[in-house]
Length: 91
Image 1 (cartoon, rainbow, N blue to C red):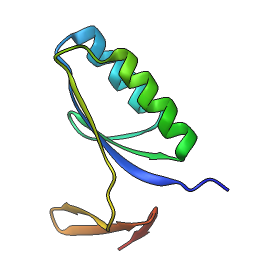
Image 2: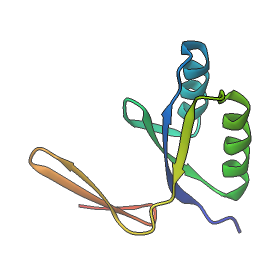
Image 3: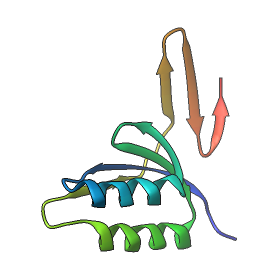
């Protein structure tokens, strides 16, 4: 059985065409949480595909980073806090 996990992908891509490709790819894996950041939910196979696709898009001066949150993630908005833990949402 595959283990699913949340990852955070942050990018800084210079070329507009390449940046649009990165955004389109990330949209198929998760949701945008900031202008240049996506939260994605992947298993090992999807993660490998995503890394492979992003590697093919990234240029020499581009930066694409993937972070693996180990603990709870706090989504803090005015008057509201949600805590995400292991793919579950606690309010």
